[in-house]
Image (cartoon, rainbow, N blue to C red; front, side, top):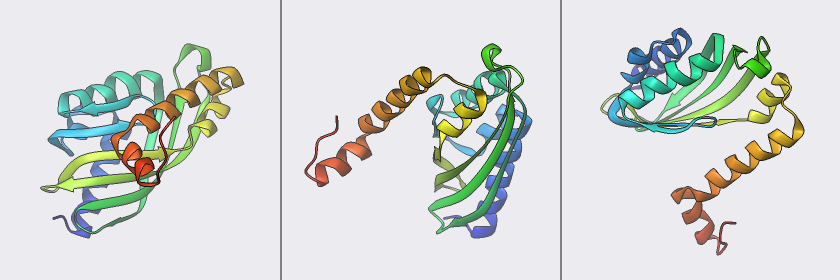
Length: 166
């Protein structure tokens, strides 16, 4: 169980490491087998994979990255926070485009660390700021939709409603 104060300190460290591109410090916020579910890059499990995601993907595709958490709350086992992030794309097709997005983060906590992280971000806002073509957006949204519908928790939810996923 983690206190409110300790949770606030943990996610402040988490966001600061994300901003700095410090993969080791970022991954140290997680349990050894922790999972980071990213809405763009998918799930990454274990500290090595989480560190590589931050340095090899996030900071490969963006520069001038800044991430800040607001209004954190926890019951000691699960925590939530709203966030804002801002970056400049380094992807050749979108080079130099500045993006600002907000999101909601869910943290499953264990032994004072993050066991599982999930985020909900409106990626359409980011893609619009980048200037992504509508046809490409549709393909990305299809991939995200399929990923959501394939999740075990989504399948269980839909079965409970008496509906099957598509």
